[in-house]
Picture 1 (cartoon, rainbow, N blue to C red):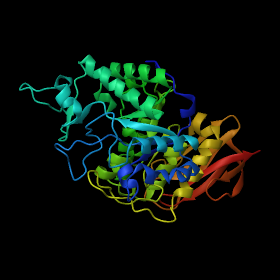
Picture 2 (picture 1 turned 120 degrees about the vertical axis):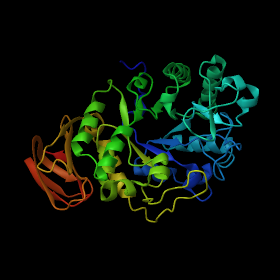
Picture 3 (picture 1 turned 90 degrees about the vertical axis):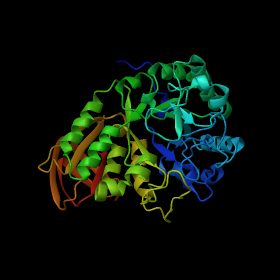
Picture 4 (picture 1 turned 60 degrees about the vertical axis):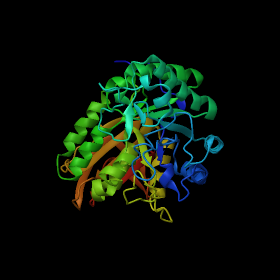
Length: 423
């Protein structure tokens, strides 16, 4: 299977930051979030993904404010966040800083009182009694009918609206695999004709990379979480990474330790990974993939955010993990070994507790050793011809001379990242 589309140049080496507008600030508005743009730019973020910005249906609404993913219109702004001029200003301000903006696109379903339900009820899947229906067990949404070509055209027209009207740079497509692949082919063809875009799929069906640049790494996340809870081993994790390496040329995976679904429904990264949460975050930022950071992870946020109600992030000042992410993301920006390099996994006598690997592009070399277990004082001796020269610890700034090998002892959850700086 070959990819039909190519990734836009600016998206290569991207770092995606998911914005939960409702919970990001006490105000929960675009303008309040906009004050954070310079900070996120400095941290190393390149792409802002906004959870759905469209209005939310009132009928069958869950909680006091409802789910972002149950929209009542595809071409209006959720008044909870502001208005169209406020969003346009946010996009323009982001662009002025060199940031890109993608919006969440929910193509599979709408809320119960979407404008189409009265204007075009035949655009929906109907049960044998002619009622709106939904196939996945979600109580607040109803499924669209992708056999209806008028609906398809209107949906693509709505996507094009946000490109033409606001200048957005791409889409994160919700539950993309529930929507026929041929729809996404049509959508990308028409939307990219207006402007080359970045396409991210909440999906893990390899064929969908015919259209999408990046897809979710759910499989990786599930096996790492299972490992953290004592079920499985690191060889299973390595097997998943090998499977990802067999994807079509140019296809990339999205790695994350948290996102809006995970945080609200399955727990924070600290609930899932324990002391290894930050070590796995290092992995996400140094492996061959696109890293995702969710709202508040740099604080860090250690609470599950309510999904259907107002529940602001409790930002800590100073942000304790901001420098942690800044160090990792600046490494991605300056060192081609991370984004373009080959990978060599280093063996050790503690293979079921330690993840150790090298990333290399020409003379650029990065050495990563992670203790993702709950065990302390684990030793590892690493040796490889690439581990030669002067290396700098990206977190401490200390430089060391390696001559083909190095030895480390790591505590539970500890991580080291060394960047080669000279002969």
